[in-house]
Image 1 (cartoon, helix red, strand yellow):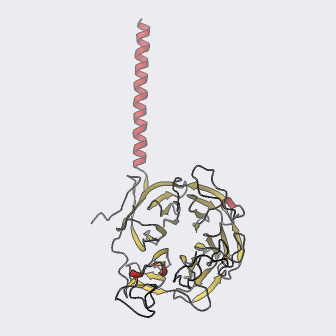
Image 2 (cartoon, rainbow, N blue to C red; image 1 turned 60 degrees about the vertical axis):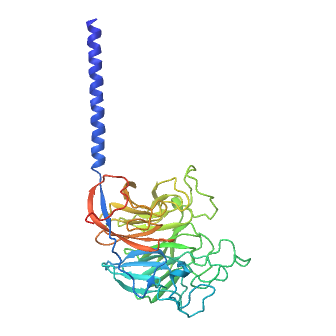
Image 3 (cartoon, rainbow, N blue to C red; image 1 turned 90 degrees about the vertical axis):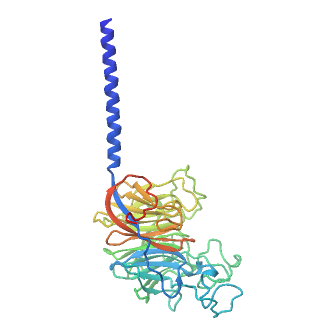
Length: 426
């Protein structure tokens, strides 16, 4: 009897000890989670300053930061509605007379805009010109280490449109092949807008293994160590392609997992299917880190794939896999510490910026929300960082703007989703 009582007491004691240990483990896990560190940001609601000349911007489709910490964006003039450009001398409305200005406001800003750190507009240029083929719908901007400005495009014009994308879009005719893309090129300019080089020709793409033309190139990056141009190619093709940035000569290309790219239609993305063995359209970014790893945005497949510069596959991470439609992986930028410890991921479907640990590709925290106020997003499309660690984003569709998020140092992660990161002092 005494033995049974002793065993019972011993068992009860063991249960209590295990219970206390479990509580301590849970508390420790909570403390460790609460102690996780990540960069912190606040939106600057007064950046940039108002544009001059009653200018307005359309779909803001690219952002880059140059070696002087100037911020460059590119936008689509033709995406503006008629009521947004009553002051334009050649408005698109069918009942308007060419050359007649109807109001003081507003007019499309030039496609390429350069801002200083204070948000002042200090440069503007772009559009059709002699000697090169300006994209039907420009897409992406990058300023390389020499100061050259690169742009791509993803235009698929219909009969009846002119070089600026204006005019009524007629139905596709029998003369327009299925899958036709006009924008099969990338362009290189000086910072003042002088044309330097074009790779590819309009309407000439022969698919994802064409070595001379692109097909809807989305974003570009030039490696300062090798002078190689990496192109996320893109909206019509399913690959990353590399050229010599000085001569335009083809170097190499590859598809998902380093495979030879294949243009066989994959059908709609289904989060329950095994990971697709090829990229879906668009292949939306190709960003090289300081350590030589290339990060590729496979947007509609909701994933980042990582490669060595020769196309050798390293790893992948699927993020928010149930995101359908436009996908979750739109664009990335790296933090400005020497190790580039963090990735900032622009997610234009869920309207957030996700902060990832670059080594594990795990999300640490996110900020943003859908809306039109500062710190909110409507189709956040492109992202870049300056030397101080500040983030710049652009928004496409009806978002039509650029925003600045001020870096506030590394801090403890207290919430997975931070919402709108409004300035604390406000």
